[in-house]
Image (tube, rainbow, N blue to C red; front, top):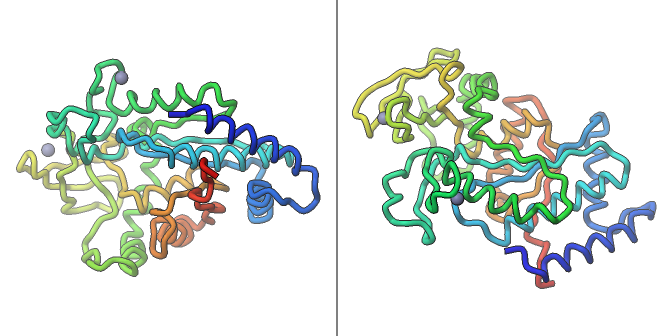
Length: 299
Ligand SMILES: [Zn+2]
Ligand SMILES: [Zn+2]
C-alpha cells in the first residue's frame, strides 16, 4: 500500500519543510497550521494532534493522506520546539456494518457486533479489527513517525468515557437540537445519543427505553426479543454515535489539531456539529482543522 512513490513524496515534503522552517513568516502549509495551533491554544503545554479510522477493512490512500497531514503538522510543531503528541485512534468499538469484498460472505452473521469482537477473516490475529490495525501499523513502522496508537475498544470497555457519556446523555436535548439543524428527518423527542451493544448477544440492534440520569439505561434488543438493563459504569458496552463520539474524544484528549476528509468537512458535517457539541456540552474548543484531500500524491 505504501509504495515507493509515496515514500519519495513524503521525503520531498520533509525536505521542503526543513528548508522553510527558519523563515519568520511560515510559508509551508504545515508550518502555517502549526502557527495557527499555537496561536489558538497558546495556554497549552502539550499539543495533541489526532487522527484515526474504523478498521473496517477498507484502508485506502485517504487514510495515508490523513496520517501524512497530521505528521507534517506534528513535525512543524516540533520545529517550533513544542511538546507534541501524535495519537492515532483505532475506532474499533464501531459496529461491523458491512462485509467488504475481500472478506467471506458468511461474515454477514457478525453485523452489529463491535469490530473488536468480530473474528479475524484470515485467522492470524485476535480479531477482525486487530487484523487491519496491525497491517497499517506494520506499514507505518519504517516511516519515522512517532505515533501513539489508541484502541477505542479498550478505552470504552475500560470505562474511560463513562462520565463524559453521562454528560452527553444529560445534554441530550441540546445535542438533538444541534443535530436536527442539519437532518432531513429530525431526531424525535426522547432520542438518546447512545448505542448499546446488548449484554446478551453483543449486537447493537437495540433501542434505549429509559435512562436514570446516572449510568443505567434500559433497552430493548431486537435480536434477543427482550428488555435488559445495563449500568455503563460497571459494564461498558455502550458507545455514542460518531457525531457525539468524535467531539467527546477531542475533549478527553485535549486535541489541538485533527484533519478530516471531504465527507467530514461539508456544511452540517460531523466536523460542524462536533464543534458545536464540544463547545456547548463539554465547554471546550474544537481543534484546528484541515481537510486533508488537498495532499495529492500524484501532484
Ligand atoms: Zn490476521
Ligand atoms: Zn441481544
